[in-house]
Length: 140
Image (cartoon, rainbow, N blue to C red):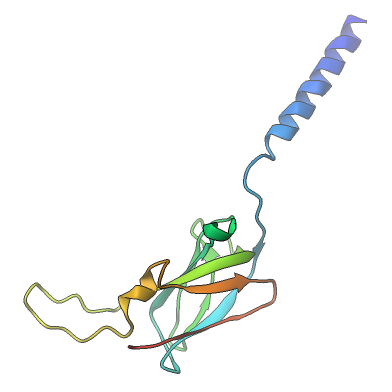
């Protein structure tokens, strides 16, 4: 009888431990590819970051990619998993080749405003399975 009690206690403990692991955030990743353009032209070397919109209770990791010569990108999470979290998100954009002249020197103007690099100036987007993204940035 003592053995049966130990077995039942062990089964109960395992059941409790199983339940403890599932309490974290719930999100689903889906493959996401797309294109980024500036004034209608493909934009190479632009980092695209897609973050779940916490203002809309979206959850999940940030995903990112850098656009190729044709402006195309394929998102992956920061820890390397392919895709992005399904749901309401905000996309931000960083110019990876923007000149940073020395203090007092004048460089080329940026390809697009720096406001695109902030959550407030980013572009709202809904991440859905099978939906490609197209981002049209303006240079001014």
